[in-house]
Length: 568
Image 1 (cartoon, rainbow, N blue to C red):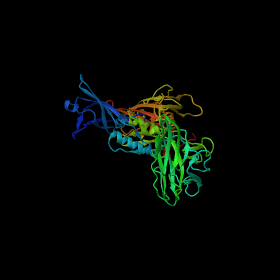
Image 2 (spheres, helix red, strand yellow):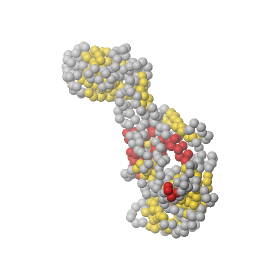
Image 3 (cartoon, rainbow, N blue to C red):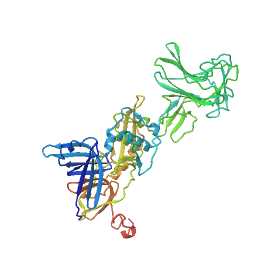
Image 4 (cartoon, rainbow, N blue to C red):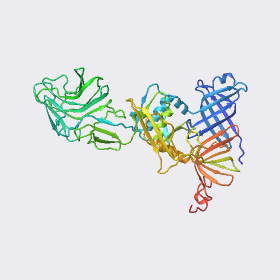
């Protein structure tokens, strides 16, 4: 049996000033639990410190703990989350948490869109931590890798034949004062661009395409422009080299125009316009305006005409690039014509569903809650370790060292638990062999949306189906992450032993029970009880170890020292 002398020291660090104050700890506990947030917390009861110090134990104050027992020590600085004075005894209870609690408490006053940072989960994590804690804060990926959290959305290009790979007009465009031909010199996409050459002395030279647009909705219309070897000259329309949207409102024509393309020879430039269709609009159309006469070489070329609902920006905040049904499929999207090839609208469909709204941090949502949806969807968890470092880790995360508990040495009590009905500290069941997550939310267009994330083997007996998650769908993966954690926790040891301040979640745990059996797994949580100089360890991934197996011996023993290894 280990004989140890427990030493507990606590120091109050007030929110302001440089003076610190020793606290007389009567009893308390400190815990590390990788299944919940905050990862580290605790409670201490102290003797009344006097009114001056008592008044300093409040929001913004911290407590530094210095603990030692059996030659092992632990030092941690935690935040005061609450305190209560028991008037009859004069004792003061203080609840302590790490910074995870502060990140969860904070939420933005206005929505923050992290779509532009979707190429790196770590960059989003760092931005949220920095915003929540009001100081530059960075996390480190300690197990696994930083990954993109790309979001995707289905989009329809309403322009048929937008890269002009078939001859005009094909019954689609109406020509006014121009001749339309295909050009193989100034194309941006495919093999051709559209050349418009004025054929009259009128500046009303343009082409018109009727389009089915929804009144009240916003659209973006764009295209790539080229001028020939000389600038346009002669009499020009004020709308020359512009895109145009038009409709009929109460019998009167309503028009909106893009910016004007510079009158520069051989210039390639994309021009774009975003407009809202009036609520009472009829007969909507878009135009390409040449705006010159046939007095000189006033031709223009255009390619990649694009008309989409919304602001024209992709989920990463960049302008959406042209596509049509002939665009090659990618790992992210597939592309199809909605009807006749080259003569119909086309649709870009995501291969993987992850809503753009999932990267919008909404008011009323705590920072840890917002990040949890994203990190778990890619198989990671975020926590602040005992030393204050922020870490991202997957389920393979391991901590150096070994927690060894054995009867006759340092183990006081052990419970070997397997249950189909018990619930764990994080609210998850002790047993489930499938996970079904249901999402429901309202998207930015006001549409009611639902999605499912399911992780299940071919044969299962008890799925875990929590309440509907009322947040945007973060994409598939979170259910698989949760199932992998549940699989490790279907058999759990809950053991009480003498204090060892070197134990950490993620360490290997080797437990020798009163019957001489040896079980191996990993530490899931540890709680140190100051008053009794004891600790409680909860394990995961427990298996029995036969005599002579690797892991049966001490953590510093070699394979040759372990003994004969059989065929088991």
